[in-house]
Length: 377
Image (cartoon, rainbow, N blue to C red; front, top):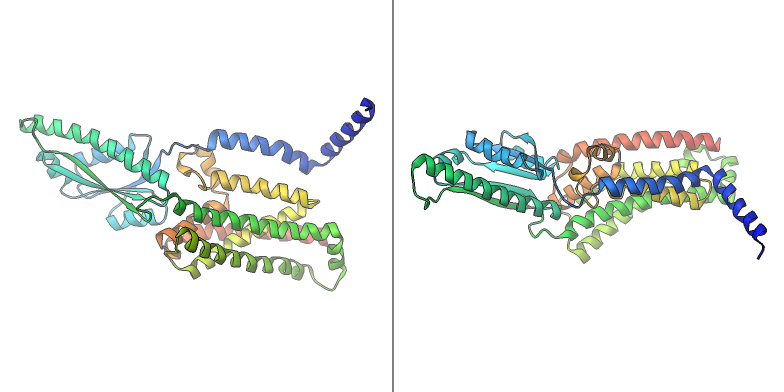
C-alpha cells in the first residue's frame, strides 16, 4: 500500500466535502443541533405544568391554596377563569393541562375546621404530565391540609381529633387509564405524514433532475405552474390516503378511535400537508441529488421530534426552545391530532392551531414556488 496514493485519495475526498457546502453544513450543523436539543430542550422531568384556576370561593384560604400550587416548580398558573366551563375550554384547547376547581364553600369549611374539598381536573392525553400532576397535587394538598388543620385547631381551641383539612379529588380526562399508546399513536401519525410529505416532493423533483427528465418537461408545452401542481396534488392525495390508513390501523390494532369527526380531522390536515409539501419543494430547489435531499429531510425532522411535544411536554423546555417550537408546524398539528382523536373537539376550539398552520403553509409554499419557478425558467 502506498501512503502517497492513500493520502491523495483522502485529500481528494476532503476537497470534495469542502466544496459541497450543503453536505458540509449538514455534517457540522446536525451534531451541534443534536447536542443543543438533547442537552437543553429535552427534560424527562415534567414541571411548570400549565394550570388554570376557578376559585368560586374567592377567600384568603382558597387563594392561598391555589397559590401553593404556583409556588412549586411543578405547576404554573396561566389564568384564573371566571367559570368551570371556561376552565374546561382551556383544557380542551390545550391552553392548560390542569384545572384546579375550588368550590364556593371551601373558605367556610376551612374556617369551621371541617374537611374542605377541591377538584383537580387533569388532561390525561399526556400520561407523564397527568401522573406528575396527580402526584404533585396530592403532596401539595397534604402539606396544605396539615397547615390548615393546625390553624383551625389554634383558632377554635379544639383537640387534635379535628377532622378538618383539604381533600383534593383528581379527575383524569380523555385517557383515564393514562395509557401511553393513546399519547404516542396520534404523534406517530403526524410524524409519518411529515416525513412522507417532505420526502415525496423532494425526492420526486430531485430524481427528475438527476435523470434529466426535468429538463424535458421544462422544454415541453407544460407551464411551470402546471408542472408544480402536477407534482404537489398527487402527493396530497397519497398523504390523505395514508392518514385514513393510519387512523384505521390505530383503531384496529391499538384501540385508539377518533372521538371527534374524521372528516374534520382530514380537513384540518390539509394546511399541515401543504406546509410539509412546501418544505419538500424548498429542499428540492437546494438539494443536488437524492442523498442530499434525504439528509435535509432528516434535518427538518429532528426539531419536529424533539421540540414539538412529540416525546416530552414543551412546558419543561427552556423558554428559548419553547419559542423556537412555535415555528415548527408539527407543534400545532399534534395539538390538532390529539384534540380531535382523544378529546373530540373541532375547529371551534382548534382554530388558532389551524390558523397558524395555514399561515405557515401560505408563506412556505409561496417562497418555495417562487424559488422553484426561478430554477426551471
